[in-house]
Length: 84
Image (cartoon, rainbow, N blue to C red):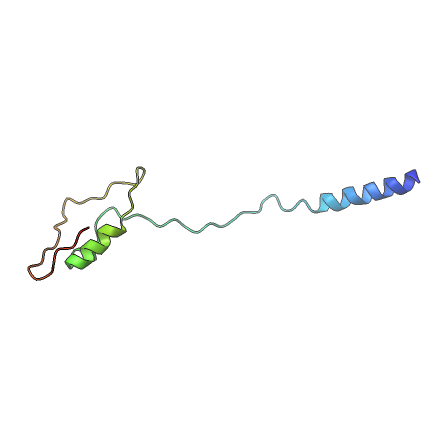
């Protein structure tokens, strides 16, 4: 009877040790989107494009600052002003 328990315990130990898996397994994560350092030219084409771009910006304490030195916000004499 003891040899039967020893045989079962040995088989269980062998079975569990085979299920350990690969130590070098890596998980491929998608690349994080790269934040632009400058406002794209397409954002200054119209007031609607500018408003859409500004609304899509995310407030972050850790992101690099956006260079707005050369940005001139577009204006329109015919469009109704929209809140940002």
